[in-house]
Image (cartoon, rainbow, N blue to C red; front, side, top):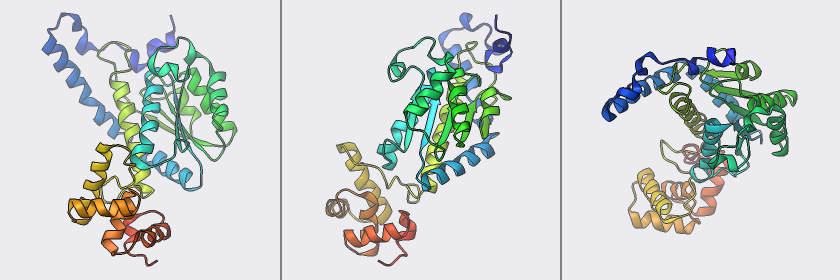
Length: 301
């Protein structure tokens, strides 16, 4: 038996759920729901560390670096999910935010046993992705001791890169290896050791914050609107029109016309309408304003 594993908070017995198998369906769900409600509060206690990671991620992208998430199992899948949502939501390139998972792409859908136990593979996968000292690494591990993640964090450290560790066990090994330790105390799981539950929820909440706040700081939003989304299908084209309407107060037809004139660039359409200029002039304004719509409204060409 691994004494270190049994000492982890996420591996402890949850006294509130020791009779889980005797509960009826609704009681199981109510119990899970009550436990889940503790997760946002636990996350709130580490917001200063999350903010520090966001500031470094913003700086990384501004200077031409990239963001990498790395993890195994549920943690790795959550990282891949967050990275894959950045291009359609914020028009980032697929290279700017990347997710690496122990066992490769197959592990996104299937369990790849033993993949997480190889620290050298974590370092190798990071190297194969072209990770450099100017990039930023987010290591994800509910237990806080996954060898694959430790190997990747060690590699980042050797390259002089900054990093963050996201875990559900305070005082973790990955926290000691990273520049910033984001250690959320989510406590014992409803199902003992099943860290896809509360620990996974905490990681998802933090990933939401890391990517969204970073992109807001980079000017990827106007007010609380996704003005940098890519309208690549009918649903997103409708959303782009709605965003333009909400930002400018114009009719649906006027929003549609502006988007057509600028090649479906939502930001450009908004600046065109609000400053009464053409697409090229709107793009110049945005360029001078660093892509921030609010600032572009006050910039001349």
